[in-house]
Image 1: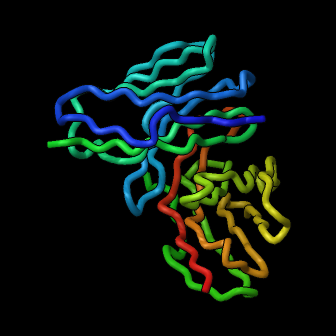
Image 2: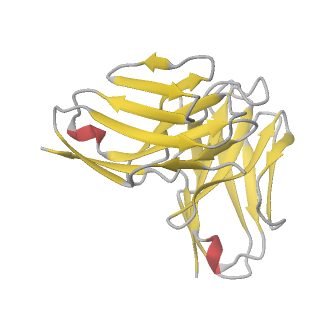
Image 3: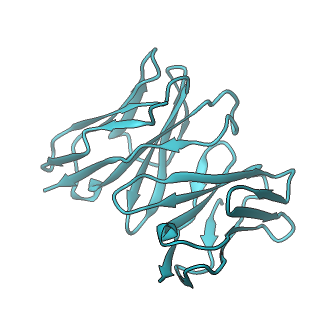
Length: 109
Length: 116
């Protein structure tokens, strides 16, 4: 069955450092992956996406890496800022979107 | 461009009642999906509508239903409410022009439903 898991439920990073959030997925038929950021009291906010025919995609301060061999997805955030503190979800999409359990990222000033 | 709008933001109901939640998608988006978010189960897919037709459905009982109007606005209905239905209900819209694709989904801030 489908399942999307995250390696760590919490992650604390010093302000200015880079952070890496990892995610494992199990559905090899999924061809599209998304990272979302959710702040308290708000809905998930789209960060970056990647299709299965790519292994890397970069945005502003964020990079998503996809390793289909081991079914692993990661989100790298460069030069973290206090505003990056949130819960981060990975999601895989086949016919529907399946979310991981989330990683709470805390930026230490 | 306005984002996804959900109303109401907060709702309190009692067991046995029914509730209707509303979602206005981003202009031009034809796909609307609904999710339930709880601390214990996380984000769970309820259903997706595209061009007024339900395209996908999650594993929720028949008490949960929805519909989409010709202007892509969507409503979700839950009948015979149970305590376990207390959750944040999120709506997301996307272009949805192809099954399994159609661009990323963009979420509203949800309706917080509390059942007493």
